[in-house]
Length: 466
Ligand code: SAH
Ligand code: SF4
Ligand code: F3S
Image (cartoon, rainbow, N blue to C red; front, side, top):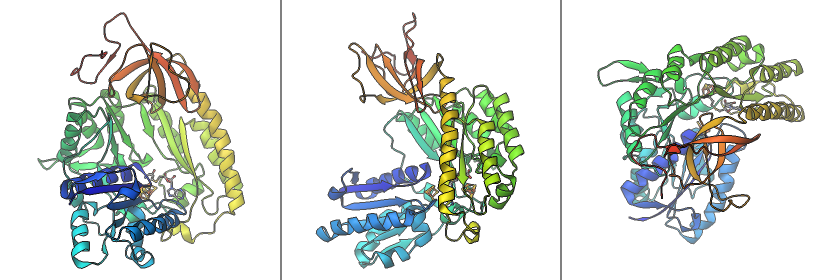
């Protein structure tokens, strides 16, 4: 069979990684080619997220629209994967009988067989089991276009924070073996990938078996990735504060390729709320970790997540979150309104009134906007190392004789810059920053007297082009 595949992805980067694997699996088994037009597709998949409200409803309204496509083309295969699929299972087919496949984050590698079974039995197929690490053993060689790639190095989560669905949708925490991760990254580097982001819900809890029976931690893995030809930059996310170890701090010190960036979700600034969330640390402990990390890792940018209006959060407790934001001075903050998730402990607790919750979120946004602007201003006049991601064609016209590019620096900040010479996508460019807005830095390529104004992570190609 050949044909076209359309995938819609919601949720976190682990879902993005999984969607790319769905495409790889179905390209290998059925010769399906990705399309960006759903009306062209022979197979349509939606990779769902259930971390916050309305995720379920969004899925069903999307499915309702695809139902019409199916009426026009009865052979169309519609599949629902990801975290909503994992939670709802066969209930999805009950409510939307035109759905052909329901699969979980851990069974996406079985899509080819599920499609065949659907065809031969004429019945919808549901498989949301957790066959642990099996998924990674049944994936074709990774394929990647572009200089940056995600690599999931673990699945699931065993922390069971009282508000969170992830342990239920993705199962218990399990680490991929060391050799598998290295092999995948080496294959990506061969295809031109220069930046690797290691993914896991608690990625710093990764403990992978090696071929000789040892168990090693994330610090060791980062040192090993550092040795791979072609990889110029390494990131990891998301870290749990409790797992932020000395071994990781050492990796920052010894591996210059490790970006100066750490995503460390705090969730609340109130000790009572942190306890009710089951986070396992206090406000003071968290702030100490941040201070220690900043002291030991020069120029570290830190971002965080915060939940506003967890059940029972009082005005004073919310004020403690505001104060924590003032004290910690995060480069970025992802703040969310608490959303009751079916099946979690917190869903049984008394919610904060919606209007109060929304007003608190606005106050938090205002406070962080000022802090973020200040953090960005601090980059004025500095030189950034930018991984060139693509040409920047938007906004004002590019000056004659110049080229304009965008990319991310070592701090995960977006940088737009001009260059008098064409640059290769995937190279690392030195950029002098002369403008900082709250969301973006701007600048121009540092052109030194030396011949090469920027370098590739491996000296495979001489730069500049032309
Ligand atoms: N494993 C990571 C985060 C995973 S989910 C950690 O623990 O740090 C990403 C973010 O979604 C969380 O950090 C949290 O801020 C938010 N989140 C999770 N469940 C939520 C809920 N029920 N309501 C609102 N936000 C939630
Ligand atoms: Fe959810 Fe907590 Fe696990 Fe993060 S650590 S995925 S918030 S249960
Ligand atoms: Fe969403 Fe599942 Fe990721 S709930 S955030 S897609 S782990």
